Length: 127
Image: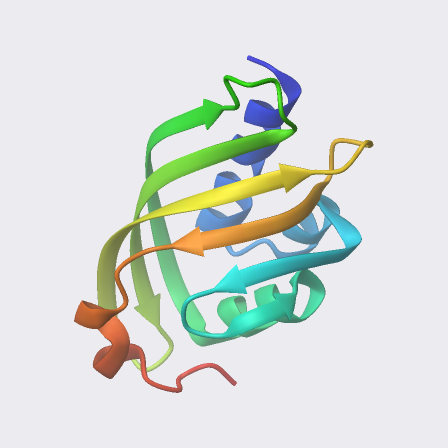
């Protein structure tokens, strides 16, 4: 397993356990997250919102793919079983694209999933 795959797997572990400190350690200080629901947000602002809206999370990782072109990039494909603080349960498949800086930290993450089935359910439940 290479370093980028290890980082992506650590990301999924932090997401699964709602561990904000572990999550933010994986990201560069000025890292950006591109989210279908929240737009472009700094990682340091994004994850407190996500974890603040969550009461439970279960992640099933299908694949972690590293760049075949030698780029500092990896993709994690997974199922997100997400319970919000109000008890709403949402389940969807997603792919997160990770771009790494020279130090191996996540500099940019782009989240990809179909928002149509969950848009009305999630709405504005982020604090």
